[in-house]
Amino acid sequence: MPRAFSIWGVSAPIVLILAAGQGTRMRSAKPKALHELCGRPMVLWPVAAAREAGAGRIVVVDSPARALAAVLPKGVELAVQPTTNGTGGAVAAAIEQLSDGTGPELEAEAAVVVLSGDVPLVSSSALGELIDAHRESGAAATMASTVLADPAGYGRVVRDGEGNVERVVETKGTGDTTQAEREIREVNTGIFVFATGALRAALPRLTADNAQGELYLPQVLDILRADGRAVAAHVVDDERLVLGVNDRSALARVRRLAQRAINERHMLAGVGIVDPEATVIDVDVEIGADTVIEPFTTIRGTTRIGRDCTIRHSYLVDCTLEDGVSVGPFGYLRPGTILRAGSKVGTFVEVKNSDIGPGSKVPHLSYLGDADVGEGSNLGAATITANYDGRAKHRTTVGSGVRTGVDTTMVAPVTLGDGAVTGAGSVITEDVPARALGIARERQRNIEGYADREPDPR
Image 1 (cartoon, rainbow, N blue to C red):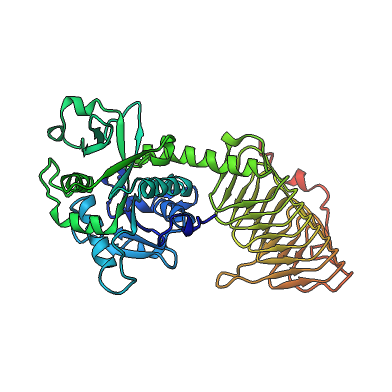
Image 2: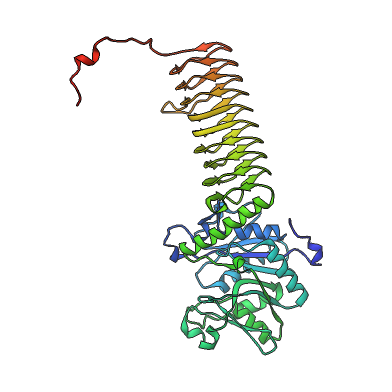
């Protein structure tokens, strides 16, 4: 739930999310921030956390290509970092946009939170705690830090004799640090809170005097200390919340942690997940209590599942299941599928953009595409809707109480009235009236002695 701004006693914080890096170590034409993490582009994870924490404005910093613009939700602003000149340059670009007079005036003591688009697991609660610590300290800047067993690759937090933050040293190049500094295990997470006025005054004074030739945002802390301003640090105990993604291996590690958290959230809400390690559920999926998800099930996108459902070894994408539905094993529910209360989709059944009525059953070995099925119908094995004529898709309408025989093909557009029945092996090309039998197959002929006239294939 969003935090109440009144507990901070000030206006809502501004959140800047730095995501202009191309992520060359991902070895991908796609910008790093757009790589998917449990059904959501990576950059949208900190966006979601900022929204849940009650941010007043959210600004994502992108490269001049503006590749992130297409995925940002309404209300999230985009700033452009014109050149690749480091985290300090990215924040400067965002502050310049925020100060251009097109939005609300920036209050000097308002909080500016800086996050990284490649640190996706930061939570709204962690952000709230960090902002609370910043308010309570009265500091001009507060950084989130954590202690790692292996701090390689992270900037180290150097403290003075009284435990205050003295500086952060980067470790991208060996010339930036001493051996003693590299042995420090407390690291900079890349998450900061600044007083707006202090940040705006310090940014123009950043220098690129380092091995990478970039403007490092942590240098702002040095500048503030030199000006006699207080700099605080808030230690985050759960290092999972600040794990960064630099390559595909790191993305896989973060995905495992994110998936574990998603599955645990559902289980704590009353969902039965038989084997969480063998179950994939995207972050925006909703599942009702007392539903059971059996192993090797994947549930993607914005799928909604009601209460008391059973999902066995199946793949679901952007579909809706009402209460008491049964799926699988080996079911495939594609986007636009709706399974009404108490309906069943069984073994090796694929359903796409179809509405299956309450209590209706598609038990096995069938494909339904662009179909509307009424209540209490039973579609026999190998029931197929031929919904595409090579140029356009057409719908099939199946009424309530319909029974299709095994191996029925319905060539759309076609309608089966309430209570209609089809004969096994029929290809239905015309409407079947209510309570009528539709049968369309050639009458069987037996040719005596046929096998004797053919050469033995052996």
